[in-house]
Image (cartoon, rainbow, N blue to C red; front, side):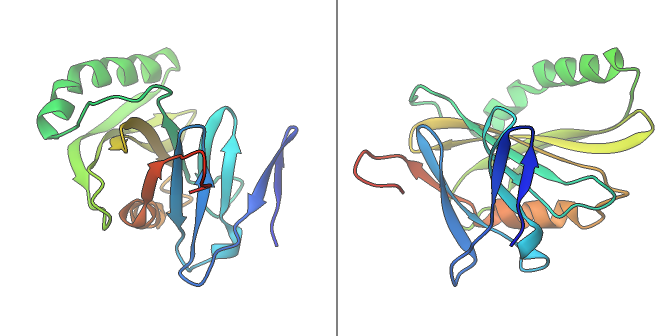
Length: 188
């Protein structure tokens, strides 16, 4: 069993059921996370660094691919489709470009909005960048979707030289992702 500690925070090792998934609670939304079979015991899932839920892939050379989830605190009747996401491109590009520029990094590529396949009818939309900071090549994707009336903001980030399979592994997690509004009677 694998444990990780960051400061005073401890993440739980992944203990999956027969279908290799487990429900995780956040304040308003619960997520069912299914992890890839390869190196499953090296994945960590739990709240970390202020994120209500973070999925950390296997470590290589001290780096882990990450996928974080942050549901909004207030329910909404918003929906997302490609038109809504495309309207956010300018705002997103400005923010990420300034982030990289202010850290003396270099933008290598912009990933236009796309819909991530999901087997549980979640409409997950992503856009992102490939950039360098401190001589590290980073791929980062910003994701948005609605779960039972709550907008969920998510971020996938990895270092392709250290994790050549990360894109596929993180997309596999997203393709099986389930979520639902937390109820007072149920942990799911």
